[in-house]
Image (cartoon, rainbow, N blue to C red; front, top):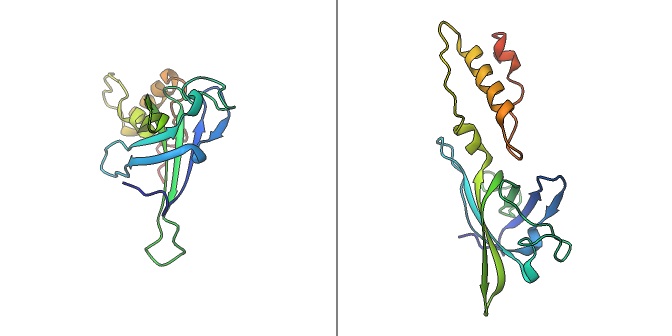
Length: 170
């Protein structure tokens, strides 16, 4: 559990229709976010104040609705000054997977946003094509071209893979 009183955070919503909105002031809590490095997909959960239905309905309190596959950027800093290895900053991009409105008499209207790292899309490319006598660079470029041609709105674009086609590696 992250206690936001001790941590600095900035939460930005990138809308599929274009534009951004800062969600930081409406964050009630961030009960979970992960930073995996073992081929697992990062996940996060954010609970927002949704007074009058903001973020659930469009244009309430000059706030835009949060839709599935919108992108949320989370930046969390531990607030410490540069003290060797003690300072930590977390910065990740996520896709909105699920939006759960919560209403209670004691806490008012809230919305729980469940997020999954954008790297999820790169781990679920459906690809089947035989490549006989091809080098890995050609196969990789073909997978990237197929992915970019079929990606949906809000999904990341794979760029800068062309040098690998020519066999030029860093």
